[in-house]
Structure formats: structure tokens, C-alpha cells
Image 1 (cartoon, rainbow over the protein chains, first blue to last red):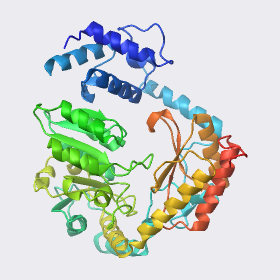
Image 2 (cartoon, rainbow over the protein chains, first blue to last red):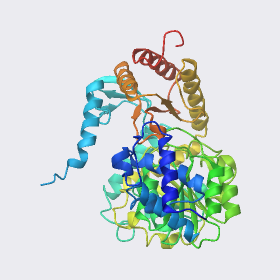
Image 3 (spheres, rainbow over the protein chains, first blue to last red):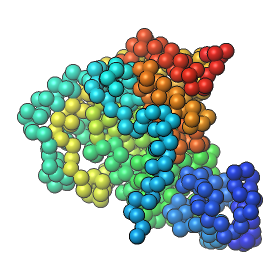
Image 4 (spheres, rainbow over the protein chains, first blue to last red):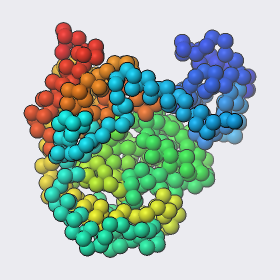
Amino acid sequence: MSETVESVSALIIQKLLENPKVPRDIDGNCKIMEDLAFDSLAVMNFVMEVEDTLDVSVPLDKLADIRTINDLAACIVALKNKG
Amino acid sequence: MTSLFAKFDGTASALGALVQAGGRNPFAVVIEKPLSSTVGIIEGRETLLFGTNNYLGLSQSERAIKAAQDAVAKYGVGTTGSRIANGTQSLHRQLEKRIADYFNRRDAMVFSTGYQANLGMISTLVGKDDYLILDADSHASIYDGSRLSPAQVIRFRHNDADDLYKRLKRLDGTPGAKLVVVEGIYSMTGNVAPVAEMAAIKRETGSYLLVDEAHSFGVMGEKGLGVAEAAGVEADVDFVVGTFSKSLGTVGGYCVSDHPELEFVRLNCRPYMFTASLPPEVIAATMAALEDMQAHPELRTQLMDNAARLHAGFHKIGLNASRQVSPVIAVTLEEMGQAIVMWNRLLELGVYVNLSVPPATPDHRPLLRCSVMATHTAAQIDQAIEIFRQAGLDAGVLSTATA
């Protein structure tokens, strides 16, 4: 359980860059829907991949408050610490 | 001043592009007159209907039409009230009893639409500390129910029992009840849920299981009760949700269950309470259609034979159609341009199907979604396959070498 917001954020960015359509210059402050042009379905599907890598489930109601990559990372770290 | 309607700019431009590319709005098709369950007049032409979910053709059932006429003459055209106030007549309780009996369940709740049945059951059953575990490709009514509920919502990969198991195991030790929601047949793709595997997981993890049999009722299982009956796991399903607007040809939704607490769900379920109940003629027609379905099990055999015929025909001409044979057969296309041209050509040549576009489809690809009926003739199916071949060639989806 050594994940930090920084390390999770880096992992998310690495996973996002596996998608060739994602801009190359993204950072933790990028807004997932606006800056990456993800629709709500794409966000949910992407979060599923991150969930499996980190063995955590992010409830959909939590996604509503997430705008940036760092928000998602902070949410995942909080969920992992709780578990 | 911010326009209230700025949020629709994306819809407006997407629709504009669709109309420009194809010449008509695919979401504004008007069936000017149904001539039978399988043929309707569209744009003045007789058109084969392959996109109406009317699996058994019972929207045109003579028994149901007569029952509706009698009920309307006897009871009037509407109830003008909620099920928990003045909106329950003897007919409503009779229909609930018949549906419950047919499923061999303790009780049934009848809702005004299938959408409301999912919305109501899902939002009411789970509370703040509970978990809803949904298939990723769930229908909008399931997602909307989850949004109306205070529960934690977790998605698992479509039809993937291992993924469901993994996600439930992650919740080991967390307080709160877990409700797993799956559909019998998925409406967009025709995929059938591996419900036996899901039932085993439900038993092992001590969760509850709700199966939406909207597209599988009247279609699968010996009595037509859906995938749970076909898989022999009815006892593991806590709640069956369904609709009257597919196989039974009318409108309305229901939930059947053996849990005696269904009585209290009625008094906590907003989409059940805060809406008017179904009018008497719809209730009477639904009961008559259910009688038709019970009296004619051969309709299900005919339906599956027809589905197999269309499915084989699509594969033979080289279309990328659903893998499984079910009355929903989706042809997946790679890009929107082709889908628009092909859908428009189909309509011009005399076949109506549903054009389904992302994000209502899985993996961002457009679908030409077909639904087969028991009442389609072999000649109509063969004609539809030929028209698909022609439209596929015209749209560049098929090449002359393969088709």
C-alpha cells in the first residue's frame, strides 16, 4: 500500500498515453473529459482498466466529482487507504 | 447571458451531419400505418419491419385487441391516479397475480413502463451503504436507476462472470448488501448473459441477483420466462424485471419476486408511486396477450427458427453480425459514414431497422440493430437479407467478391 497521489497519477498518465488519440503533453492537472475529449462512457471504461491495475473499485458516484487526472489519483489513493 | 440550450450544440451538429450524410433523420422515422405485425407504411411505401422488438407479433393479437375494446367500453380510458391511491383497479391486481403465477412467484408489481420498472426497483432496493454491481453494457434504465439510488455503484465487464467475481471479492468484509444486476438478452447486441455462472457467484458471495428479462421474456426458456429459466437457475434470481412492450406487444413493466418485502417496496418506490397507473385497456390487452403466448408455444420455436435464418443469411453475405443467435441481431459497422449510408439505403429499399450510434452502443462502433419476429415469413426474411446485401454493396460495407 505504498501508492501516493503522484505515483497513481503517473500510472494513469502512462496508461492514457497507450491510447494514440490522447495528446502527448498531458499532466496531472488535465481535465479528463474536456482536455482529453473522453465521453462519459470512455471515462468509465478507462477507469475500469485503472481499477484492475491497482486492484480497487471506484464507485460510479465518486466519478461525478472527478475532473482531473490528479482528482482520480487522489480518489483511488483514498479508497485504497480505506480498504 | 449563457444560453440554456448551449449544451445541445454537440447534438445539433451531430444530428445535422447525420441528416446531411443520409438525407433523413434516423430518429424521426414515422410508421404511418402498421399493416400487420411485420409490414408498415413508411414514407408512403410498404416496408418490412425488422426493428420493432415485437418478437411474437402480439401487438396485432386479435385476442388482445378484443380485450382492449371490451375493457375500454366497460371501464373507460384511464385510471387518473397512482397505484397507491386511486389507480389500482381489480384488473391491475389480476394482471399482477397472472404474471406472478406464470413465473411461479409470490407476488408481482406492475409499473407504467419497463423503464420505470428498472428505475423503480433498482433505486429502491439498495440504500446508502449497499452496493449495486452492474454489467458495463446495462440499459439506460438500469444506469438511471443507479443514479437515483444512494448506493455505491460498481461496473463489471460485460457478460464477464470472472470480472463480476473479482469485483465482488474486492468488497469482502465491507458492510452493506450487494445487488447484482444483469440483463437476459442485451438489447443492442443480442448478447445472452451467462446467467448460470452469475447465479453461482451470487450464491457464493451472498449477494442478491436481479435479472432484467425485457428482451428474453417470451423468447427463451420452455415457458418463455427468459434466460434464467433456460439456464435452470430461476431459484437464484431474487428479482425478475421485465416489460410488456416487447413480446406481449403492449406497454408497461413488472417485477416478480418471492421476497415478501415486495409489499413494502411498493410504498418506497417513487417511479411506482408518483405516476399514473396503466389504463384498463392496456391491462386487459396485456392479460390477453399473455394468454396468447401461453396458448401458442410454437411462436417461440418459429421466432428462434426465424432468428437463425436471418443470422445465417447475414453471415453468408459477409456481414459482421452478432455471434450468438438471438432475436436481436446486430450488424456492427466500422464507421459512422458507412452506417448512415447503409441504413438509409435499407429504408429506401424497403427494410426498417434501428440505427444505433455511439455512445448508446458498446466500443464506439455503430450498429444496424435488427429484431426478428415469430410472424416474419421465410420469404420476408430472405427478402430482407437480399436488401441488406444490396445496401451493403451500395454503402461499401460489402464487396461484390464476397457478397
